[in-house]
Image: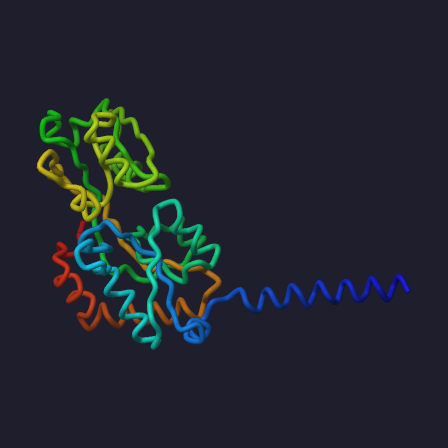
Length: 260
């Protein structure tokens, strides 16, 4: 009797694992059955991912691409606002299917997540207060620079300047917090992709002339969603070739993709 019970218990566990494994992959078909593509986006990056307070609508290059993917699938799209610290958590949990949130493609990140071909390439820049006395990247020696958690910008700046510079970095949850710290004089500079910096510019700030470290942005998703990833990859490649994404870029007033 004990052996029979043990066998039934093991069988039940195997069926449970099999069921979990079978439902773990999000596919195009499962999204179509749901009727909604769930996309992680930013809501404060003008030209990329921006929630327009006047219209209540999302707009920007990444929004246009997300809507186009959903249209190809024949489903609606729902936008979920993500931060540098929540976007991967929401992908892992399955709360979102894909993320278009100016997420830089790196070889290290590709080991854990899937990235499409880059739909836009930005570059890192540095914003300072106009009256800070900082007029070049070299003037950052001994200064404190604000970056977001898990950002690649700090290392990019160190690599670009090379040896002989002492830089301190303070990490923040989001870029709005960095801008507040900069305005308050708690930090000396704000370092990130220039498309992000542009969204936080005002009459008190200036972006230094030098741009560096190409930042290619890709559609990010779970590695395990192989069928969905292939579908999205094919669309991005097609739209890069036929000028669709270039038209989106121009319509949103973004600079041409950065080239080293």
